[in-house]
Length: 115
Length: 112
Image (cartoon, rainbow over all chains, first blue to last red; front, side, top):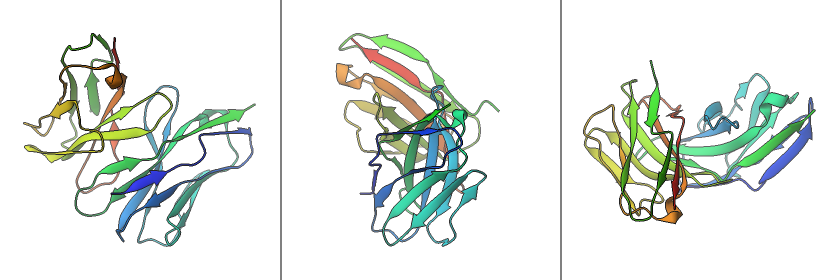
C-alpha cells in the first residue's frame, strides 16, 4: 500500500520569505501522480500543484514549485515570496496512474505566514 | 455547476444512532471518495467508487457503509455511531481521465 509522510507538523515564516515543505512517499509503482493541496481555515481543499512521475521537469505554478526526486521518493513544495493568504494546512497526496486510483494523503503541515 | 455538494454541514449524533451523509456531484465524474479528517490530521480514505455499482474499501472502512446506485450520488452510512467517529467528513470526485479531485465543503459530525 502507498503511504505519504509529512515530517513537519508546523512551520512558520515571515511574509515575503521562501519556505519549503517536505513530503516523502512509498510505492512500488513506476507511474503515478503527486499533489499538493491547500486547506485554509475555510476548510475548502484547493489543488496547488501536481506532478506526473514520468515527467522529469519539476512542476511550477506561479510562486509555487516542487522538487521531485523520484529515486529518493521525495516531493517538496517551495513557496516563494510568501503571502499572508498562504497561511493554511498543506497536504501532500499520491495517486497511482493505473489500477485502483486511490488518492492517499499525508498528515499535513500547518503553515503560518507572519506579517 | 454546483460541483460537489455535501449535506448536512453539521450534525450532532448520540452514541448508537445512525445517519447518512449525503454527497452529490453534477460533473458526471466516475470516481468518488469519502474521507475523514480528525482534528489537526490528514485525510484518511474511508471508501471510494470508480463508477455506479462499484465500491471498495479505503484505509478506515470499519463502522461505515456506502452505496453508489447512480453516477451523481455517493452516500456514506454510519451505523451505531461511536465517539471515535467524531470527525470532519469530506466527499470528493474526479473524472476518470483527469487527476484533480474536487472536494465538497465537508460535514462536521460530533458523536456524544
